Length: 294
Image (cartoon, rainbow, N blue to C red; front, side):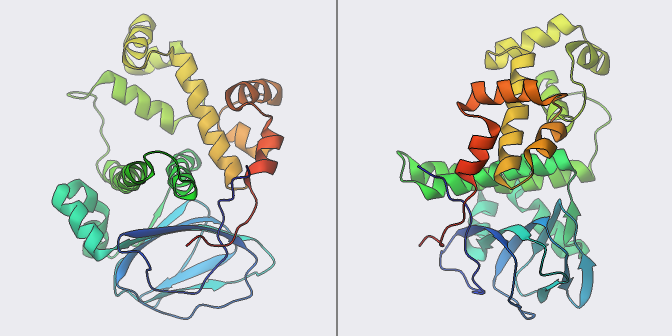
């Protein structure tokens, strides 16, 4: 079965759902959307194109990896400067009611929304690795919405909450960089470091030097916490990020280099072992457009 994750663009600027909606657009636009507002939060994850966004009458050129948050009732519109270039982005809408429900569960879900309302900063930039990690969560949610699998409603709820919390966490940690690991788990700090440096060398010796602990201790805590060696964990993480980069139409040659593989042959063997098909077969099977789902 082919996985069709893209959505045909609609100029609709109101929600059909009471909670959230998410779309993956990839097109060469012939349309224009005028300045508008809406009564929900809009996250906009920019992947590719020659466009700028105007928010409250101020224009901002966009580059891949930009994350934009538009709060309710803030006027905005996108200007497309070159319609021959593919225009790719994710759009994630969250209703005010749903946001209020999340906030009642924990203030952690509200950090980025409150930050934007207070500072007037609407655009945040992610580096390649951080943006690929974000894409992974977006694609997981979109895939869950596509199929009627057992536990769909529960899994979708988990994915939505995880995506929103991830956005808040990355912004909080960007605003509050930690220079010490005191009071935090070495294991969690290692995982965070690995996720942020997938494009770099991640040998056991290097990690031991970075965190001032023995490599045998690092190997032990990974095996104890997730039942995998640290090498297996890094490999699976790199392959997962590569898969999601390919889903978003990053070229295979770019994807494997971005994720720290030093040569194509080792990447090819690892990818085929993990996913049961070659990178090219995976790309051909998983990147076709569809009509919007109801």
